[in-house]
Length: 134
Image (cartoon, rainbow, N blue to C red; front, side):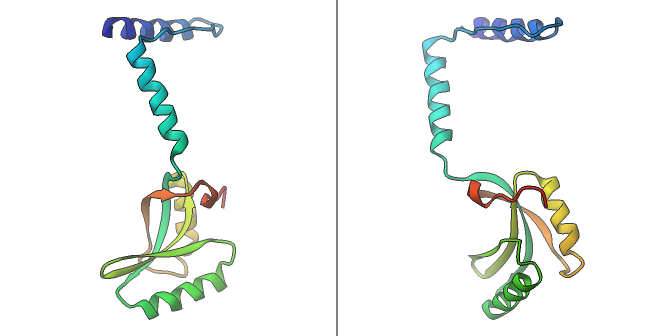
């Protein structure tokens, strides 16, 4: 079975290397097909995607968090900002991007007004939160 999968993969790569693209049909064994179908279903049911945010502040003081959040919303009304509490810190994070490069653009803009900001990876971003090009 493993030989069959490897042979099919090498055959497909070989076909792609010769001029015009060709239609390749790969017939998978039943257990592999079931595994792939399960993988597709699990991904369809996920409500979150992995991405990047810019962390502006981490403080144990809730009052400071609220002050910085209001200031941020006033300066950058088009950039979504939210916070999370991971004891003992309140973390203020802005934006939601699929790629680190997109988040770096926002970080560059924000570092003029906020010191000590950095990028954080986030596994719980809703697709509706994602920001396109900033």
